[in-house]
Image 1: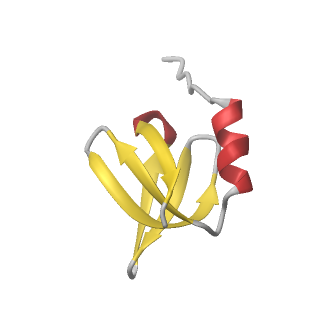
Image 2 (image 1 turned 90 degrees about the vertical axis):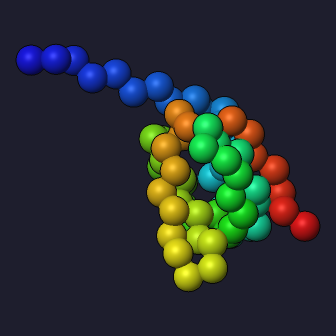
Image 3 (image 1 turned 60 degrees about the vertical axis):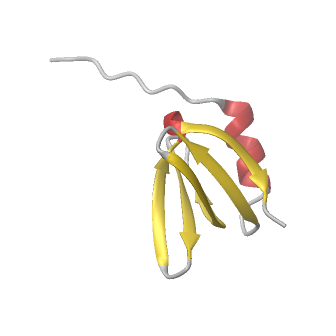
Length: 68
């Protein structure tokens, strides 16, 4: 049976938890997306952009910043 490993970055996780509900820009390996940070889990975040929810794997996030 293969063993799966998950990288959890505790500082990123706790920082993101502290800004849930705010507007952010997230740069991923596929481009950037703007929206409201709705939820944070150890392996992904949920971003609401318009009427669409995006589930973004934490491993795909390059940077995050507040959106004005």
